[in-house]
Length: 352
Image (cartoon, rainbow, N blue to C red; front, side, top):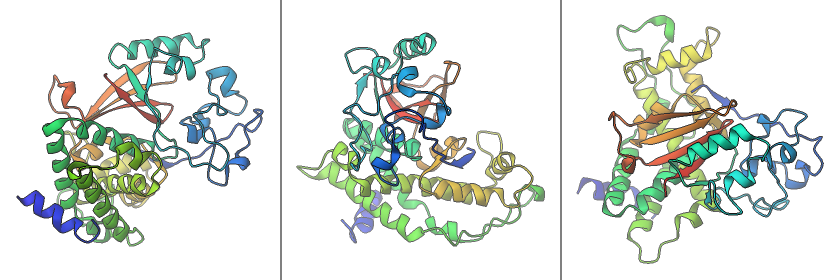
């Protein structure tokens, strides 16, 4: 009953280093003119590719098979899709291995084939610095909405979690816990320049939309909400960012997984020059368009989500890491989302 009342109350009014994304555009490649796409659109990045990974003298078409002129990519001035249709990893003319891995890249093709022993499909995600949070949020909701009663229970649990988070804690000072090393950070002051009111409005929108998806007879599809709807897409991303930052501030001195505290993590990431490393890290997490690394444990703890990241490194090795999963032998059916990380960009993976 508590959760239903909370939903009705909240929706009644509206029914790990972290760094800024630096886009490097290979202007020397014929056919790539970002000016044709508007001030904020990079035809490579918005199609799900990371041009910063190519280097200054690399033709992505010749080297990797990426073609921004393909029909999947937006025309100049068009709104890029936040998520795109699923595609097979190996099979069919649109398969990932055929369209996005050049045939000369034998080691990378072998890595994708190995990945295909566990996963069958992937879904490209818009690359605008929010790809991790977008992939996680969309992947979780897609999985839960198609998961029957168990999926509905997951959504209710997620709603309960985000409702109970005190976003106003970001505005308050948070003194150092007793017994912690004063050299790790001074008192964690409030962050007066963050837009908590916007985050609260976004939370109401997300909760109300999830209620509509679950209970209306003819709800919009998740794809309709996220693919071309910037309002819901950004609201979901902002809620995940604020949930993570709020959790990290409130629990700044708690040891995570028996390792560093969040203060210590921020200090190790920033080095000795930043007098308030955790405050700076929280600012970077909250800023839309900033990429996120090394904070995935915090994301899992803040949201209650369980997810697996499969990372393909530059040497074409695949590394798996799981977050929010505490059982040694995890039941993959209980995982909320599977993410695919290539050169800093995140997309989604599917087992069927």
